[in-house]
Every structure is written in structure tokens, then in C-alpha cells.
Length: 159
Length: 196
Image (cartoon, rainbow over all chains, first blue to last red; front, side, top):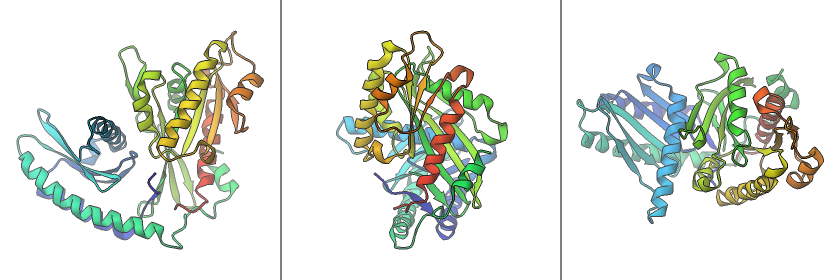
């Protein structure tokens, strides 16, 4: 069972820079980063045209299903997936134990080989950040920001 | 597990609706979707077969408002209830923060309820969870049917630990929001604890 994912400002900004750069380098339509549980962590590019919440959930479902298939044939997982469409294509790369990097790009405009290469580099940088985040979460004093919430706070949500 | 984002000041939690085939998990989500204001919900996704049986999952994102400056978002999922979709059910339980068990009140479905409850425990254990340690609510659905078992009977079979339980008629909404609110409350109460 993975521990809770906690994202801090500093790491978030760093992730932003990496995803923005990847989006620019690949002339991508959208770049996004999703927790394997389906939570959206970061999205760059033409996100206004896309339902990013649904995209995150379906990405997680897809990665989970492919992971299940991989285990059936004796692999631990399939770290890379490529889906080719007529106009746009989608490439997914698994980052560390719990995150998925996804790039949606123009099938005719960007070579898939280049996408794969740049994603590999970005994934390595992102792995370092998420490893650091995990250590930070495990440090003493990194308690829940909700430690102080009261029953009234919770009840007020439903009033 | 929930995802706390200090940068965007959001907390995201995952609630899974579990239960035997045709018990009304999808109907619960459909009712919540229909009765929630547009600004508080996202698109509902149903990955279903041509005969509208859940194939992989239903998904409904909800925003509940703010607590201490953090936006609270809940992702509701259902599992496919049919026995042979067990591999898919396991996947949906990954990262779960709270579970609703939707029981079919019909006497004929008692074995299916018990089998599904056992299956839930086994599949949670495979993901490293113990049902006893998770926010957990039981819903007795289809209370309007003439062949429904008594609440006492359902309770003794399905809720020996006496977790919060609700009677429901999902298509008309009876008990649907009570179940969801209680589960969300239990999940948020759990966040008071240390995230590690």
C-alpha cells in the first residue's frame, strides 16, 4: 500500500517547469501527470478543451488494467504505452511507483520516437522529485493539515 | 489514499461503492449525479457493456466545498458486481479512502451479498488494506421490494461490527445522500490522523 501523496509548493513548481518544457519541446497538445489512483497532479497545454478529471481517471484505469495484464504474463508492468489516433496520439510513461506521465500530440507533426525520448528524460527528473516528496512526507512533523479539523467543520460541508 | 495538494490547496479522496451484481451501485451514482448542482460535479463516466452492465467502473467527481481553506474533492467509483469481473474489482480498490457496501435486500440475493462482502475483504487485503481500519458504510438497498429481508436479518448477516448503515431505494433517492454524506464524513475524520 502506497503512503498518502502530499504535494508542496516547491515541488509543484518544479514539476510545472518540467511539464511545461516537455509540452513546448514536443509541441504537444496536452501534457499531464496523474497519480495511479486517478488524481490529476499537473496539466499543461490546451487543457481548456479537455475534461482533465475524466482523463486522469481513465488513465489510471487503463494503467491499472494493463498492469493486471502484465502480471498475468509474468511482467511487473508495461512502463510505456502508445496509442495512435488519426489526428492525435497518446503516449503514457510510468514514473516511479505511483505516477503516470501522459503526452497527447499531433500524430503527423511529432515523431513518436522523439516523444518517447523526451518523456524518458522528463520521467527521470520527475522520479527524483517524487522520491523527495515521499521522504518529506515521512519526516517527523509532516502531519496532516487536517489534524485540527472539528466535527463542525465537517458538518458545515453538508449544511 | 487521499492526495493533499498544498499548492492548489485541494484534497482529493476516493470512495468505492462495492456489492453484488445488480444491487444498485451504479443507480446510487446516477442519483447523486442527477441531484447535484452542475458546479459541484464533473462528468460521470460509465464503462459499461452494451446491456448497461458495469464492465470496468463508473466514475463521478464531486466537489463538496472548503475545509480550512482546502477544497475537498471526492471521486466516487463503482466496481463491476458480476462475479467474473474480479480482476477489475481489485484494480478499482487501489488507493481507496472509504467503502460503501451496497447490499441487495432481496432474500434471494443474500448469498450473493455474503459472497461479495467476503470478496471485498479478500481484495482489500491484497491491496494492503483491512476493512476494519477503513471508513466503511453499509447500505441496504431495494427496501421497497416485497421480497426484501428484514433490516434486522440483513444487519446480523452483513454488519456484525455495527458500522453506520442506511436503508435505501436508490432509483428514488431514499438513503442515497445519507449514505454518501456519512462515508464522506468518516473519510474526512480519518484525515485528522497522521498521513503516514
